[in-house]
Image: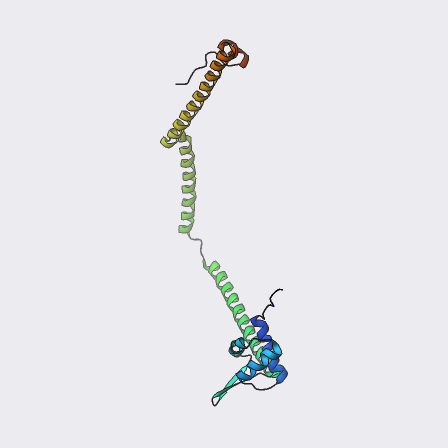
Length: 205
């Protein structure tokens, strides 16, 4: 049997607000700790934290009278709170729109003020010349790549590896020839002719 999933924070906040809207009364924390679990399924341990979050967001009013704290929120207050929040958001959006417009105007003004001076043109031309020179030198270097010591060393290693491979296969052929001669009395010359093996086959020095 699967375990019942608990309420999310948003769901708890919503249900606690329902208590204020439905009861239209003023409460102390201990009263909410009895009502919310019984009527809205909010765990007693989380009532205080949920209530505080609503107070912090100006959704629930709080007032200390004497030694006791009282909490309330009437539907009309919730509407006013939402209107005030909407006005704040709209004001912020308008401010951002103005900043965007001002930044755009500043960019356009900077573009107009930028002058293509003679010095800048000369520098751009010089950069173009240097880039062409670099490309030409790079192509020239590539022509002599075969003379590069590192390239030559790599070629030597490749040649040595190839020689070792050739001599290993040559040795294998000689072994097979010797075995066939001893086992079946087949002459080496006959075997070379039948299998297309050069008679002058020998190890590479």
